[in-house]
Image (cartoon, rainbow, N blue to C red; front, side, top):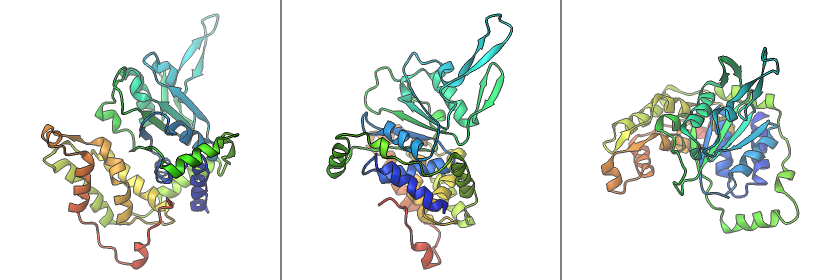
Length: 323
């Protein structure tokens, strides 16, 4: 039942974000894995539309904040306002107090504001003037950054990039999809066609079901061997952290759930491996000099580390519902 609802969510988002079902599926996978998403892509490819469509299909409270150099931490987390007599104060919630928060162009604000956001992402709590409040549940942050142009940007440090479960990109649509986009916006806004599929409680329940997905010891070993290769590779300065290993574990569980299974297979690990690890790796100078990319190295690691043997033919049937 809930697997079918997850597929319906993807179908609804696909009404608006045409031709990007793979990206839609991986965003939903990260949401079900209780993770946060970094979308790194060009302006105008539909990142904001994607977040809005998810919020409508999943009945989530949605806030968007356009990050600029003058955005303050209090804009994100909120502040206390004193009463006229100065004897009491009232908390004014910041933009982060919602279910789905879109942090637009996170690399264009100050490091102090970035840190305020990332602290809430990590802890799931907002602390203002020593008073701590839980953010609404479920809670997910979709942050965007533009890879082109460095004027006025403040790139996220590696320790903060590590807080995002996955880094994804959407890319430009193909010709057929772009024609569909043009036709779909003749007289109406496609977002108006997105129908609610689930309630907030359903999302929390699906997240709990993902946590119960079974992982065999051989899959744990496979994940660990892949991660260790990123730490031992002579061309990599900084490999994947234990937080990255945990992110991969949670993502493969959600991938299995979206595929209609209650157990993980090696294909699940391979499917999301680069999305979870690429933004956590720093190359050594000699790799950059020789035009070696992170993507190349991760492909090599997937070839070097042999996956566990798949015993049953049933396990070889994989459907990620992306076509």
